[in-house]
Image (cartoon, rainbow, N blue to C red; front, side, top):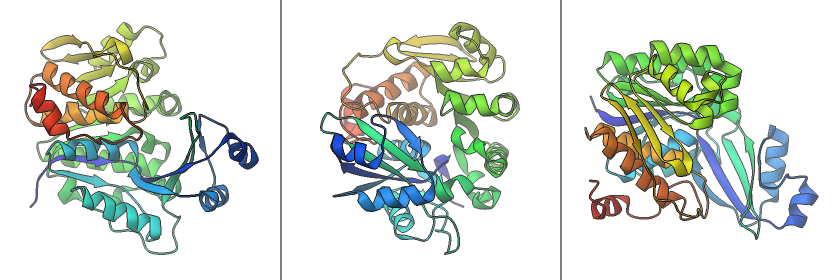
Length: 329
């Protein structure tokens, strides 16, 4: 049976990128600079209106898995796509990046493949219109026990909590991983996601997980407090490893060996998209390699710094070479 260093489970979303000026945005009724969820009919209309489309496989945890793969980990991704043009593109693109995309595209009769239409303005603003489509229908049937059970680390995407079948898939994946001797953890994903499912999130963290990765807003939202220190303390009572990214203030890690605060090298971002995803990729790579917590955080910081230096949520530089130059790997 094949084993994996890291397996992710999350939304399989195709990022579709196009250039657009303000007149186009106004004409199409697109709010500039924000992310909006759209329904199927509008998604198809916007997709058809895009000129010079550039497509890339996306999704938060999928981006993390891609980053970890670029660092040399043996990776797999569990996600749901339709057997349409975008779904086949997603599956083949993940495979081309060395990631085992373990779910066959679903035959006709289902929702279309999820996509996020991203319109980039001349001033660099990104206006995102996301159609969740089939990825949000992921269920326990999509979780191969042979994959989840052979993962050293399983990383779960909080956005999937919006449907009961997604929660069930989470639990099945986490339990299969832990039964096989692996570690399971979650990307909290969004404070609003916590607001919708706080009790379920806290139960999962307390009973099923080995680590939690989130930013300050996400960690605070778990306990409905503005006091990040209180939120960190309470979360650490429930889970053995808490990793909190704090933007320019660095990273706080609470583990069974104590607390560390790791600073970051402050830079002006070109595009902050994917910073959290690639931090997680670096941190989890360090964890998979048995590195000390401080080294894990420093690897994560370096990966985040690389991705915010250019447009797009996935690394462009040779991360292995970059980390070796910095003495981190």
